[in-house]
Image (cartoon, rainbow, N blue to C red):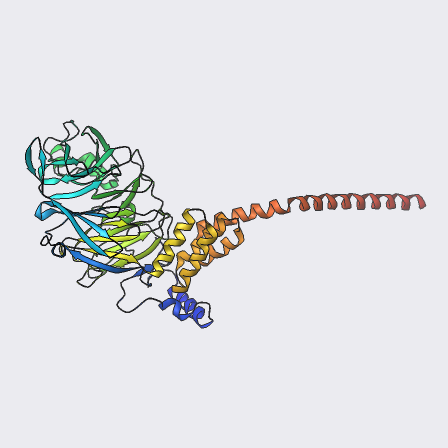
Length: 499
């Protein structure tokens, strides 16, 4: 990431901009109050306050549904208006239907067991759940060391159990914690103590293999000492093994998003959020000012030391995605290029903050966050400011670049220092062929990569538009020069005859 350079010059420039009317004072303060928990980072790596992109629409708990308190819930999943809570400590799954018209959460059922071959089988400490587009339900029945496959009415279909393949250690318990099922009916599970990536099955329970194993980057010192160590010393040394993932989700294109929160060394090289293709390669775009790692200036931030630790990720229809930082209760939302859209949340007891945020999911652009210690779910909705940002993204994603630019102008009315609004307008100008305007907008916010692309296209456009007159001018100059030389030669010849 780029660190702050020449801080005093930046402050002088901002003060000058306000005094000269380039940015109205209200544009910096619109929607921001002293108790706001929203911020962003600028090009220099400085944290800047922003208007709130989300507000707390509601908070609900088990007791509000008439089923008693949740106990250490660990998983939340949403399909359409159906909300599933894995009430882990109570060993049950809770299904809720959200009535958006009346802003109510209606209990549909609680499920603590299933019937298998005529016998009741109790669910033990479920950690996650996934409902397919076809309505089938998959539950990570963790303490039973199985994944349950049920129909839409929670009737048993089959179980997915510990692989018998030799690649899965006999000494490792099968403890599935998180799972998804892609449109091709492949099930991917994050299994505790498995560091080979996600375990892949068919929905019928056939083990396929592993996908997305994290890269291993031992240091030169590690390699050297392991090379010269004795067998006994090697046995005591830390193994060069990939880091475990801790969560995953599917985006709207069928790709896997994954998070990890345990890593060594440089956090920027750890890539704590990744987007995996069908063969498990990370294809996440990282073209923002800094890498998508959560907080950039993370030393002792918010009373917590160390970097952000992502524990969940959700993807939206406009190719943006949000990551949940369990260490500080923050939600970091990024666009498809890896630019930070907005940051909100925190640790605490007030609305919009959490005691132990463990999971989240989306309903449209609403975000639901599950708090394991508070035993509650917080429902966030977009503010007007956040709506304009997402509308700009939506228009851009659908190829409506003029409308996207108009929405970015609306964003600037709320927050005149919002870097991504200028970059977004620049992208729209670039794609509609106005390369000069794109260059100017990218230059304002130091977007060197997009500026370079715009400059190359502008130079090509400039040459193509002027190539014909340039050729005629060159031909004309050539004819004039030839003509002058001929005239000089003739006159020189006549002068010689007189002598």
